[in-house]
Length: 416
Ligand SMILES: Cc1ncc(COP(=O)(O)O)c(C=O)c1O
Image (cartoon, rainbow, N blue to C red):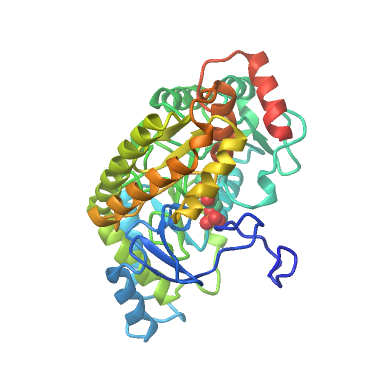
């Protein structure tokens, strides 16, 4: 199968080889994936961070298998599982009402359109990725709304302050939190600006929600009026949620979709949320990720390779000094069977035990050996840090700069 020969209309994000062909995996278990050739990978991608408990986690697999027999509700209508899942989400993330969806994209879109309708204000000020929907495409002109009334401020609080000078037209500020490239002070300042302007804050926690702990990662820093979560709630199964004030989310009353009560998805969410509520899988993943990071940072330093690592054990990102080194780094990692999410954030699962970590550390040492040709080359600089952060943020990392520097960086990064 070549890039252009697949019947699939979409080009989904997934591990691909150097020719952009999707890697095909025959099976998955815990921290491992087995590809078509029988090669065993250690999975740091984990379905872009949505597998927290490990592949095939027995608590989820058993609940799903039972629900598939019809023993646990039906796709036709309401079952006790709906209430349990809603109660679990409410206990973990708060809000007066909770809505259910199938994907992060659908949840965020529904949330912001509800807030727009409820406030009667037309504009959404956005930063970060919120899904594939064209409504989020940046406008060609900085600080101007796109055709869907969305203005991107690219995580730059100076630009946000300029936009909030006319708050009466702003329905909400929509943020995709990131804890690798933004500081706690960044969130506090964003909250201050929004409170001062009287503007609603929507936290798109589709990726980070429930991953850092048993709740929203910005509950204290942002106290969002509306939240969305997805990846942390069902170990990779297709469900997402929106929560917040009854008034702001009243327009969600119009939402219904045919698979709403599908019992295997509700079973997966119920079983995964029960584990997530204990905080144990998040602690296990964090500890495993931290151990891997300590090893990787030392191995890179010992090999004199100019690669920094941003973030912590929950989510981290490699920051190679050059694009050439970055390409070689992921090629070497592929050869050693370390399945990284190329260019983006890495997320270990709670299935990374001592044996997996020891194996991963040894494979990483061999990756460093393969990169010996880059030893002692120029160190990581600000240009590299902005470039790599852009891959994961779709915006600018939190660092001191003036308006001119912001404009220049945006012109360059948007053009790439
Ligand atoms: C912050 C954020 N919002 C929304 C989405 C879209 O979610 P989905 O891919 O489930 O549609 C993603 C996906 O990565 C995300 O990271």
